Image (cartoon, rainbow, N blue to C red):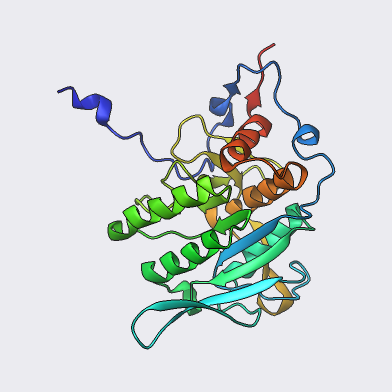
Amino acid sequence: MDTTRLARPPLTWNIVGRDRANLAEATRWPSPVTAHEAWGDATGSGVRVCIVDSGVEGGHPRVGPVQGSHAVERQADGGWAVVPVGADDLSGHGTACAGVVRSVAPDCEIHSVRVLSHGLSGTGDALMAGLAWAVAQRFDVVNLSLSTTRQKFADALRVLADDAYFRKTALVASAHNLRVESYPWRFSSVISVGSHDTGDSGQFFYNPHPPVEFFAHGVDVEVAWLGGGTRRCTGNSFATPHIAGYCALILSKNPELTAFQVKNMLYLTAANVRGAR
């Protein structure tokens, strides 16, 4: 058997410092879709975005109201349950992601399910429980600026990602910042995101050499942080909520779209995609 055809493509985590001319992509469509055609004047109204992370600080100037706040907690029997909690954040990471989403889609609903604790510590089981709950709630968009490197969770996470995909929930997942395999960003049923370093927060690129599918602003990003403050951060975690925000805009204008159609709309509006002339 010729095993060369079975080789996996090389992993690409970001395009920081790379020549973006190599990303030029031509479509068979007569022209690319403009932002006006994709979302027009939409502001995210009517779209529910769930941040699966360390929690979200409600009332933060860059976040505003949090419509729902939950946390995954270990039970006495060893199982996990998702319970309502106050709108707070144990590390700042979730608030940062929520603030980015809000900057793109200011009128979307922000919901939070906390799966990470202090210092961004967490377990694959907590991630599974939180994501399963989010999928069951049928949120329109779920932001996952986190992943697990534990292979034992891969199959179950793939099932959850597929379930979300067919329920019309767009899972937007961050590629790992290190050159390691992790999940769920590696699955084709999610919208996977890495970073670019153009400095333009309103620009994103399609990657013609996946598995990472899109690159968004992720270098030196000013983000919301604990106590109503801000800080500068770099990483795929902060690129991901930009794409989640664009998903919210697309769904705000076109609520009937499936996750597959949302992903295609992102492709057609990417800065490096040019239509046939």
